Image 1 (spheres, rainbow, N blue to C red):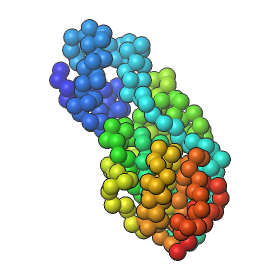
Image 2 (cartoon, rainbow, N blue to C red):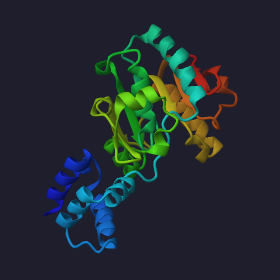
Image 3 (cartoon, one colour):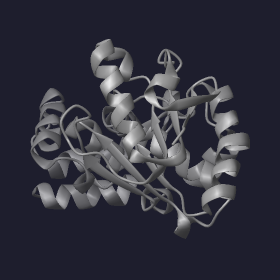
Image 4 (cartoon, rainbow, N blue to C red):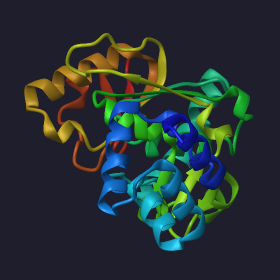
Amino acid sequence: MDWTGFKKEVFKLTTIDLDAYKEKQMKRRIDSLIAKHSVSSYDEYSKKLSSDKKYFEEFVNFLTINVSEFYRNPPQWKVLEEEMLPELMKKFGNRLKIWSAACSTGDEPYTLVMVLADYVPMANIKIIATDIDSVVLSKAQAGLYNKKSVAGLPQKYIDKYFTKIGDSSYKISDEVKKCVEFKKHDLLKDPYPKDCHMIVCRNVLIYFTDECKNEIFKKFNQSLVKEGILFVGSTEQMMQCKTLNYDSKRSFFYQKIQ
């Protein structure tokens, strides 16, 4: 069995599509895992995956390392759901343009889809999701997460949009994945999307200098439509937001003034 055949076997066993990951990198990692067990071929290893629960769990866990969390800081998501989104839809209709900047492994844009789907049909939802790191983007596109990642997510979303794989891993539905467009993007160098109704950028600006942070806030402002909303992380509140052309709507939520 070659690599292509092995990917097909993995999909049959787990519904995990290895084509969603960068091939060279994923093949190298799986080859090292197989070598660790002194297994001689993909054929032998796929048989072990189908017959030995220990091998199966180890393999699935191997694909879900280094992920962040869905629904991080739940009270802030509640404000988004109950106040910000209804207000934006009242102003701009139910086809909102939302950008999840520095989206990491996709937890945030996928959460946005699930929350929006409570209000509008999935066909109306399109999230732009960007990150500078192609490794985390490939994980995001694969849509596979461990138990810790989904621990804070309301159970209704887990039941509706995830398939459990093995004892402790979850795969997000294709229905949700179709609503997100992932792209590589550098916040400091690349052009920003235009006419966004909302930008979500949380827990990443803390790593920038104050000068760079203010520059990014200005660029976000230019990306937003008038009265669009910027949603930031708990450690990233904007000092003197008026000078940057924002009003503070609620903690962590800023509205473009003009």
